[in-house]
Image 1 (cartoon, helix red, strand yellow):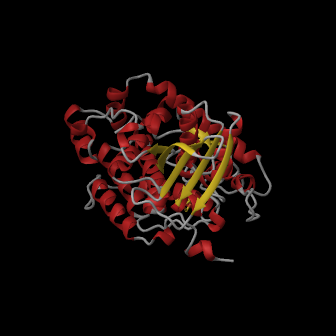
Image 2 (tube, protein in one colour; image 1 turned 90 degrees about the vertical axis):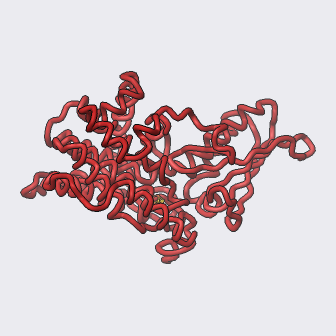
Image 3 (cartoon, helix red, strand yellow; image 1 turned 60 degrees about the vertical axis):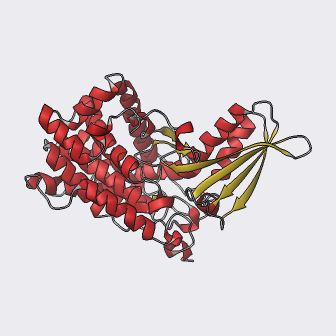
Length: 402
Ligand code: SF4
């Protein structure tokens, strides 16, 4: 399992798999062949099916134009490479248009790219499997050593990780602030109005018995709308699901006057929850549908909130388990291939749900029937059983509504 730096990536939306990943692949390939003037990119499967809406072409063109290179793009939405549905072949062309080098990359979610030989691009696995191979092992280890989950993370990554986590938190807060200030229609053709500013204004008047219950909605909308507009966000675990965790954390920080240090620790715990799914399951909408994106974000946020509210490691695991379980089967069928409908509202609802899971887990003693590890397995089975229509191809479901 890789560092949390590979899970929390700071970058530009709207899609970790469709913009961040291809951008990284293009940069890497140009870096390997800096002498080449003309490149060709071939997009396959889900990357081609929703690449226009997700701005894949804009992302790789930007890389080429910054490097002073020419780029032609070919789209193959009906060809799915067996290794992963998000495939990108980049070719270097000589003056006669002949291919001199080529490489196929796979954008497997959360901005991460691999080749078929996964190891050649993969950063080093730093978490030992005997302690971090599953949530069950991690809980056993923490229980034996008397550690919190965040302490076990720091044991491996060292205190220097906190510098990066601080940057993550600052970026999350600035996406909330920008999202609350920006108004107007989002790009892409759906003519969808940003709503965060209005919801935030109304939330100031609406105080229920549990405090300001609309605040997480406003914050999640703010970050998700920033993402949809190509703004700067942190993947948590992906771009499409980037609103859930910051919304929950910022809401709790404001309401309970929590220090940044406690938020950093909550981010470590949320991070290890996301990392376990990334390692043993998937966080790619093209592979398992939205359960792997918003479902995982809800699990991460529920775990973080439970820790912030004083929960035990078992209650934290319970909240994470509910976050994933209650999103099982969730399809990915974004309208026009944009990361807007259903993605933006889905982030807001998942933020509320994460807080509810946390309260529910805190009311329990942490014991429950279905483990987080078991739900990851079920998520993978369910995702593989979903027709590709519902896995980020925009060929079914909501995407067909006129
Ligand atoms: S529906 Fe979910 S998985 Fe699909 S693009 Fe939107 S946020 Fe990502």
